Length: 140
Image 1 (cartoon, helix red, strand yellow):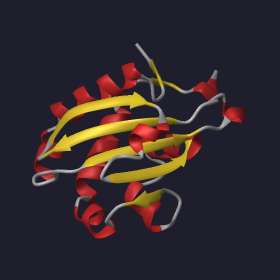
Image 2 (cartoon, rainbow, N blue to C red):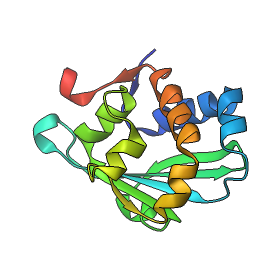
Image 3 (cartoon, one colour):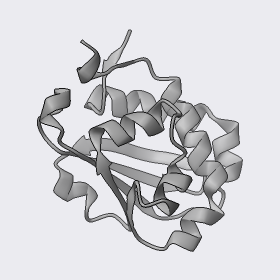
Image 4 (spheres, rainbow, N blue to C red):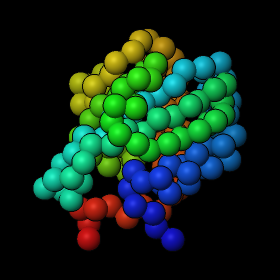
């Protein structure tokens, strides 16, 4: 059953996929920072409010993934900000997240060299998002 994009149901399904992934577990060894994703509102795409996704990631495990106000995500060690449609491109593998940061398509607050060291982990997280059946608000 499909879950609404960037909803609490999506967050919990995504967390389960990450924790099932042995590739993620090995690629993210040694990671110990929280990551906040800010999904900016795009009312014309039926995504009226900005949302914050807080990912508590530690040493190859997703301890928690929650969705709330954008301000929550902005308190994380790493904050990645982009409009809804850009995040949709990442989640559907049209845009690689690390490349997107290097090209300025995703705004990063935090240490870029650290993120680049964990590119494989980031790519595996994207693989995990593709395993969650999503209902995109702009595709109704």
